[in-house]
Length: 430
Image 1: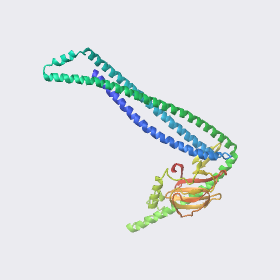
Image 2: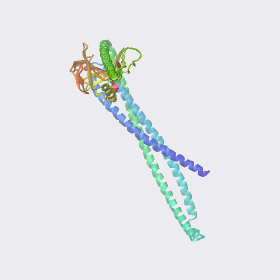
Image 3: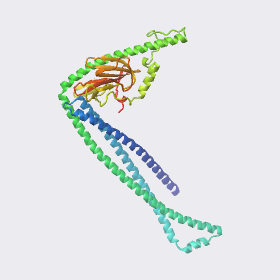
Image 4: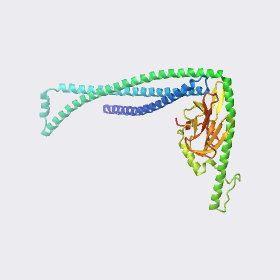
């Protein structure tokens, strides 16, 4: 029974050690990942702060300023969450280290007790006569050799006991030093957390001040939003017409190819025309049938998160979808990108063909087809491409127009899958 209990204790200690090592390895990996994430967040905050400082220097508050503040708040929240994760990991490490120190301390106590027993036994039998008597009382020469070997082994065992005690004490000291380092690390992380929470509170206060000032300009903002809504409706109509035209052209091309194939392979079979009945299955997308389009679609999709921004030194002043400023609401079909000044170069985000170049009255619109994807660049002051032009990624296609509030330059960028609008931001590289 004692042996079984001792073995169970040994197995349990071994499992605790394995768990501790596995946890340590995982925490190292997690901390490295979090450190990379934290550096990326800090870099993004730095970039936004640089742009924000320029926007803030203007006398009049703008929607763009509010948008940047909201982004800063979101990033600050993300940064604080990262610190919280670090604190949790370090706390877990401290817990595991304490477990290991306690395990080693128990092991040391056991080793000391065993050594104490062996010392007491050795003291009681320390007489040279006893050792000699033990050897010479052997029944045979071989038995005497075995007894000498046993005494040597016993001496080695006692020396190993001492070595084990010293090694365990060393391990305990090392673990205690590691524990001290982790506690210092946790203290530093908690201090950083407090500082970043203060920064967050200041940013929220600044955001509330900007919102309050924007509310005082609500009449001007209402006019701007009303103008935007009219422009968006006009833009949507123009885009819908171009998409319908492209789909119709692709449909006719697909039918022509089908008829040509049927004529060469099975002359007796005729291909029904569009709308001729139930015999013809409608394809999922006419813009995903042509071999060239299929390759372009696949290439475009692979580059999600890696597309270049259409302008240099720009920032998203009005995000995709629904948003509110005070009591005013907006619904942006794309993203509005503000630039330091009007007239900046606007570039294509991917290879494609220009489907349309239109003058919408208060600005130019260029629409580029990338297979079944369409990128739309609106509110341009000028365009230097024409319909049917084959363009490459990063190629200049026009110039940015004036912002709605007159604070600099601005373009409205839309990304579509056929006639469906999608949020462009996740497609751009940071």
